[in-house]
Amino acid sequence: PGGPRRPAMAAASTPQRPGTSGPALILRNPAHMTERELLKLALQRPELVSPAFDAYEIDEFTAEPYAAVRQAIADAGGAEEGVHDAMAYLTAVREAAPDDRVRAMVTELAVEPIRRRVVDDVYASEQLVRVRVRAVQRRVTELQGTFTRVSAQGDQARAAEVQSELWVLEQYGRALQQQGAAAL
Image (tube, rainbow, N blue to C red; front, side, top):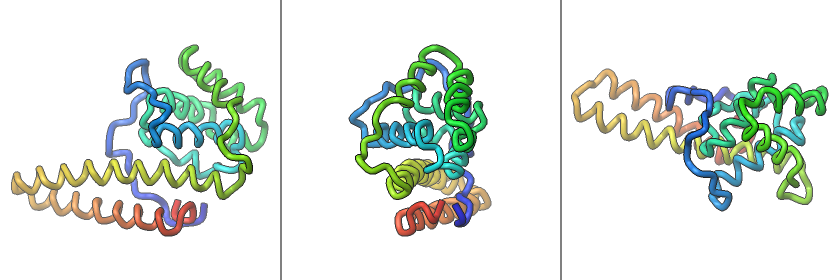
């Protein structure tokens, strides 16, 4: 909502439709827990996360099953659709799921209780920010490695380009931590 647009992170990896392979889902992993909560909000309370959620890339979800659900939500028109007609939205997300495994995950997330007694804008914003901060941190780490490699190769133009993107992402990460959802 209403802040500067986030820097493009799509270059971090080529977005692909999630398949059946990928890292195992570890429910105690803090990143996976946050991704799960955000998806539950997108399915159960889309009015709290839309339209910001719809701007999230698939690769911001590190758990493969969650990336697959995120893709199904996108294929169904995004969380914004759930604001208008919740039942039609959930049906569309299930229909957009590529297989029974993803459909089962959508159903599970659509009915599992959200891990907060009071589910409000503040909680939704916290989940949005946590997922985005982790994505920014991953991209910063990738860019630092790229910068080291291109600098060692003597490619000054590419090194300057990477350093510029790195600076923008670091500023964005700080803004997220200081301003929360206002920086989204």
